[in-house]
Image (tube, rainbow, N blue to C red):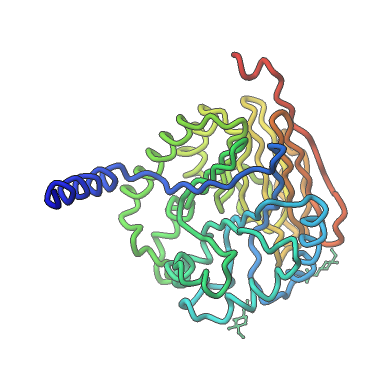
Length: 324
Ligand SMILES: *[C@@H]1O[C@H](CO)[C@@H](O)[C@H](O)[C@H]1NC(C)=O
Ligand SMILES: *[C@@H]1O[C@H](CO)[C@@H](O)[C@H](O)[C@H]1NC(C)=O
């Protein structure tokens, strides 16, 4: 009896580990089926460079929209991520900054390139939740929020130049290298998950840009390897940071919208490259984004440090979208 139980358990463990799939979290929508959230990126600077002002306005808007959770699109701690799990920056740049009542919700975070320059594994360590229970950072994972599925992706390993010049900046590739194997397994897992998703809204989150008219421009590795998959599976939005600004770029060949929410602290780089045809909005300063989702509508808003709405639009899914 004990033996057969052990054998069953053992084969279950083997089965699970052989289907390396993305970790999935369930986050219920509100009782009326809707969902509200904020997205912020490129922030951890001990409150400086207007990080505290952005945090304050996030608190105000978070209250107004009765948000369910917060998304961080990476570059969580400057300049080089966390040193270890005891790094005081975790409290100085996170716990003591986002203090508003409305921000005492779950934070779902991915890593940015600056996070990889420190001890990347420290940010992933669940022990941080003992210091601040809001914190949840993983390399790649899914949040199933009923009407919407959020696919969080670890985009830093895609970027070839980070692997090439180890003298300039050291990247913490533990549990990642070799690059090729890591990204092909991630793309395979993502494709399965996108194919299985029956949610009305499919939203993909990663630190690096797909479309951008600012400093970093497009990330060619992601445009080549990731974008065709997102279009193929009818992803509604891709949300990134990396460029320290706010942007909205739409598409002519698909329904996907590209959102940059990289205005969490240091901004004003003064860089905008020749305008893209589909550029809907660009703001070179600090701010953040809100999403309000229902079974038929998505309302998206961009805010500055004063809480002013700088840009907003609405996506409506008609009934026929579901039957075609
Ligand atoms: C934040 O403060 C800590 C502790 O004083 C310091 O080690 C860290 O470099 C600071 N970070 C930034 C981005 O200024
Ligand atoms: C803080 O925000 C204000 C208003 O947008 C801006 O004028 C100022 O330059 C910002 N400060 C920094 C350090 O970016």
